[in-house]
Length: 291
Image: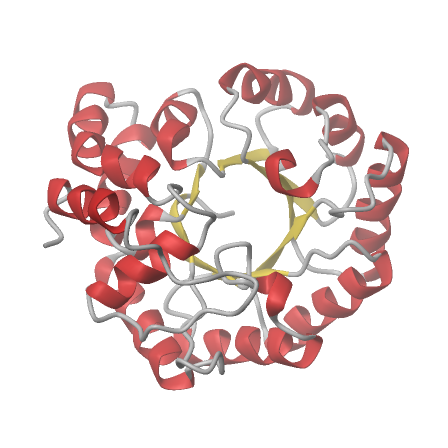
């Protein structure tokens, strides 16, 4: 259904933390023009945790409107409350999103049975394609491959964004779920290898800054061209790591502002990139040919 480089879009903000609607419109146009294969809005990189429910739904609505069906829009609608996740997923469907991305419920540390019942409940409540999202480093819970296999036959659940960077786990999910179940990387550093192993794409932080390059690398990897994919990925390696020198999306928002893509806005408890970390991100941007 979706393949290639899918940008995990930042949510641009004014200095006082208000969402910058004009910059959001410009970013959508930028990614369409630069070849991003889909836009993932209001995910982790989009600061979903600090947007209230009305803002969350409004940002989704605006991105769908601005995209004008030129590129698929996948809406982040996960929450640690099953009821809230259903509400947000319904908002995305009403807005016209093409699919939803649902992070595992964070903080409350559900069991595997709880994770299964949570995702099944959302899938049964809202008729829209849904991608599971496993990022245990941020959520304090881990959606195991065996639970993914239980969820895979559920109508509306079409794939998973696996952000552990563990390629052996990706192989296990493929073994358990079959070739029809989509697997997307949530880890830019290992995304190339995941696609070479049969994954369908990457939901990328790096693509905020280098969308054309990430698209080209992804297409080469999806075509099985290992040498070309490696050559295209090499200049981006610094970004894959440097954009996590502080908590995402702190570094990528700083870098995007440096490139004039957005203003210097971020919401507490996140802060602007520290002066000590800026040289590393700037060096990665230079390595990628962005500055």
